[in-house]
Each structure stands twice: as C-alpha cells, then as structure tokens.
Image (tube, rainbow, N blue to C red):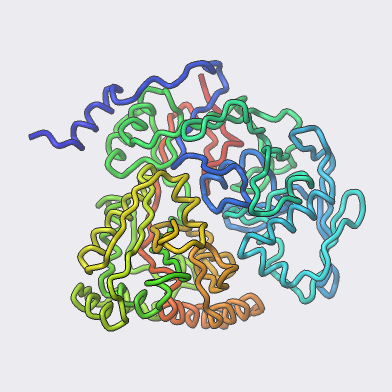
Length: 528
C-alpha cells in the first residue's frame, strides 16, 4: 500500500507536483521566496504577524537595530546622546535618508511614527508611559524627555519583533492604528510594488536605488542593508509538496518554513541548503480569549494543564528528529538566564486526561461552545491546531473547529467580539524565542487587559513584577522576579506553553549571504 505522504515525496522529487510559476521576471537578479503564509496585511503597526514583520524589513527602517547578540546599534541614526541624569535622549538622523517617494526623512516623521507605534505595541506602551515629551529638536534631531530613566530605550527602538517601530511618512503615521496605511512607503532598501500584488498569491519588491546604507558590517538587524538583488518576489504556496518541488526545480530560490516531512528529501539535494537561522527557536502557545466564556474563567484555563503533552504538539510541528524541538518549556526561552523551574510541575508532572475532565467540571465548564480558529494554509499553526482540537474533543469540550485561511484567522483573533458574534475562544500560535528571553518584550506574557496582545489577559500582579524587573539593574533580583512572574503566570495562565521548536529554512545553493535571525533580503547575493 502506498501512503499519501510517500506519494507526495516521490512526485516532489521529480518536480511534478508544482504548477509552473510565472517566468515573466526571469532576468538575473530576481529572487523568488515562498513565505510561511500569505501577506495578509502590509501595515507593520496594525498587524501583529511575522509575515508582515518580514515584509516591513524589506521596505522600512528603524532608528536602532540589534546585532546577532541582540545588542542595539544606531541604524537610521547618525548618533544619539543621553543626558547625565539619563532623563533626556537626543536622536540625530543620518544624512541622505529618503522615503521611496523622494521626500526626505524628517524628525516630524519620526515623532509621528513612534506615537502611532506607541498606541499599538505592548512593549512600546511601557516606554510611552515613561515619556514626558517627544518632539523635534532641530531639522535632524528628535528629543525624548523621560519621567524616569528607562534603560531599555535603545533596545525597544531596535526590536525586530512585531509590531516594528518603523519610520513612515508623517501623513501615514497620523492615521489611526485601526486604519491600514493606504500605500506602502518606507525608507528601506526595497520598495513595495503595489501594482503587482495579488492577495493570496504574490507580493513584489524592487531595489530602492535611493537607499543610503550606513557604514560598518551587517549583523542581523544592524549595519548596512545592501540590496544585492534587483527584485524580490514572494509566492504564497500553501501546499508543502508543491513548495518542495518548486524549490528543487529552481522555480523558487528560498522556502521559508519547509515542513518536517520534507527535510530529509531536501537535505539529500546537493543544490539545496537546509539550516536553522534562528537558534533561539519559536515558543509555541495555546492562547485564550480572556474576554468571553468559557476561558474568561482562570480555573477553566488551568483545568487543561494536566492534559497538555508538549511533545504531542512539537512532534506534530517538527517531527521526531532529535534536536528540532524541546519540551518542558515554561514562560521564558529556555536558554535565557530568566528561565527557571518555578511551577513547572504543572506541565512536567504526570499527564492525566481524567484529572483534566474532572477539573473542568469542578471549575464550572457547562458545555459552552469553544471556537478554535485554525489557519489551514499555515502549516505550523495548522499542525498545532489539529493536536489541540483532538485534545479538546477527548476532554468533552464542545468544539467549533473553524478551518479558515490565514488572512481570515489573523483578522478574527484581533476581534473582541464574542464567539457567537464571529469571535474566537482559543488559538494556537507562536512567538520568536529571542522576544521571550525577558519579560520586557514578551508580549504574550503581558497582563495589561484591553491593552494587551490579542486574548487580552489581565494580571495586575504580572504587570507589577514586570515593571519591577525593568527598574532593576541587579541580575539576581531580575532572576527572582522572573521566577515570581512564572509562578503567577501558572495561576493567571495568559496562555499555555506548548514547547519550543526550531524552524529550518531551505534555499538553493545559488544564494549566499543569508543572515542569521529572520528572513532578511538585504546582503543576499544570487548567482545565475
């Protein structure tokens, strides 16, 4: 008997599974990329997704950028100065910065952009709570006056995680965060070719000749962003066999997230390189909607803990290959000095489905409908969701398993509507490990209620501990505070940790200069 998986592997190996992609831009210098999912939104402030973040990294730029060790460096800035009392920062822009429409980048653009970002991003809200004044200081400089010293200012302005603190024209930055920018105009190394965008299928970028790279050496998010190819095309290919075949035939140059089933096949191809570019991995999460029943009840959220087997979720995502995933993961990235064993018995103790069923009844679950929003065209999230759906059914939860596309799911999970009015109850997702090393940028761990990331958990205790962590400069005290945060997180349960996985990426050997961290398109060279 021939299994479907073996058939797909065979057809992919000889290039029969993939339809022919357009060869209209066959000229040397075109790089074709298959992203993890479709580009559902082009606005990096409005959207909280890695796909939109990766798009923004082509088009926009930030004031600071972090290197491979996550140390911040000036990016759009020529220099910055901090007053002796650390209450005033002066940020001076580099000469020659221009937007894609030819207009110069001004301090007014910077101020408006940061203010729009500050209304949306949970980490930014922490910074803006300490800002007394943000205004142009000259025709090249911005002044930031603080209420109290904020040691992480450069880190947050250079963060590579959604939502990005990108600089856009003032007229766009003055839009409400609920409005998507009408056109994509940044000052980064590539410009967005809106006329060639096909939602659900394609996004196109062209090298911006007016980009002025800063001096130095490139390291992750920092340094000169040299566009070495003339054109970048994103081709959305939801079917893994089709993507694998396209990569092998050379119809695409880079597949961002090959599924575990196809890794052995790709590794055997001498024309393809398979590697992990982000060694901090991805933290998988089961995210609850805290606004509506049944998961507005923390006892019902906690009742699921005895049934969670992180290994089940991780093998669904990353297969059985050793070293591609870890279990026994808490609320902080496991390689971080902030990670601990505090409260971990809730996830590492004996697993017991019956204990979970009993806990659900005792917590007051009465068969309310649970909407699980599943993006079928996003393989990693689809795999996690299938495991979650099976678990919920075994626990006797009344499950509404909604199989949708990623664009629809991304809109749904940002809606505060009740499940009966088109909202959601629970969602499988993940966060980049580098953003979960500390409580500062860990947006899933916030307990800021309506101001928190989708799901909107409220935990005054977590917020107070996080604030104390950011004020502390003592390493031992920071570690103690993170232990307390983790203990409180197991009580309030903003989400359930599902493990950590490493995502391999695959690209043809004709590409060189692939940077560590995330998919970045500057510094890349393509032969042939």
